[in-house]
Image (cartoon, rainbow, N blue to C red; front, side):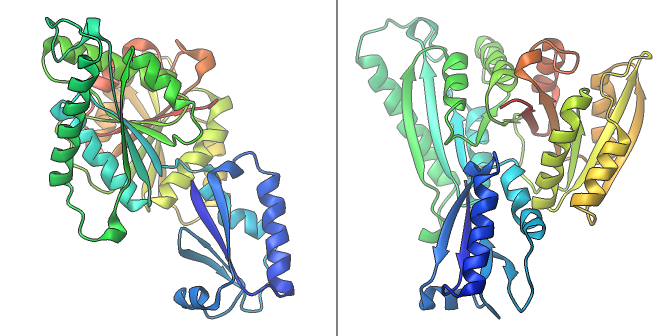
Length: 368
């Protein structure tokens, strides 16, 4: 959740701005992603080093100062709109199986949380009959959970050594939980929580059986979760997102989701690429160029973007080739719960992306 701060001393300009802001938030379906804080204390106002008040800030970053200028409702919506639509990463759920792959995903989530003043919840879910860390073991009520809590404690201790905190202002709150159940179902259930902004998890685990099991969990969660899912490949080294590739095949989804990805690209100061892959005379990744350009020009005129038609034998090969040729840092794909086995996100392509990508895969859901 983003914090919008209204800064001022309660004069007419301040009251007008507060009313306009309240009206906008109350009428917007995504207003739950913003928390409003009024700052009227003079000492606190001085810390913002403003040239005039009233002013607006998001997460401590100044977006608007009065300076004799009137802020219309339309301009106000343009200012805070990206923070209502963007992919939020403040409340991050990190499933772990204690493997090196999930440790790498945790480190990625930790960097996201640091950059967004966020927090992390680490969850380990096991079913005794399918305990991949001890497949031949015997379940003893109570002792199983104790063993898992100890393993989770050791996992987090190792993570703290890899991600040292240099100051208290950079502290990332971390909550930990051990649950008994089936991993996929539990993670999907937790994704419906309004406090979960994103799931970050590894794409594969360690070892043959675990590799297949966790990979299956990753692909199923990616398709069925009710929040964005970021999948981190094995041995991936985090770096800033500079080139983001977006792929979709559903024009009804495109107009909504392109806006979200454009805002995400603006937030990360990244370039955005859209591609249309032509596969054996099929067009599974078709995106209407006119819609894309209209959205960019109207909401982010300074954004660097490209739209490209790629011819390839398969969708996967076309995407992979484009990623390598254009130094893509993040692939974003869109699915819908109502089309679980739809043209775009059918199971085989999902699993191929999960296992074979060497960059993060961000899965968005049109109907979450």
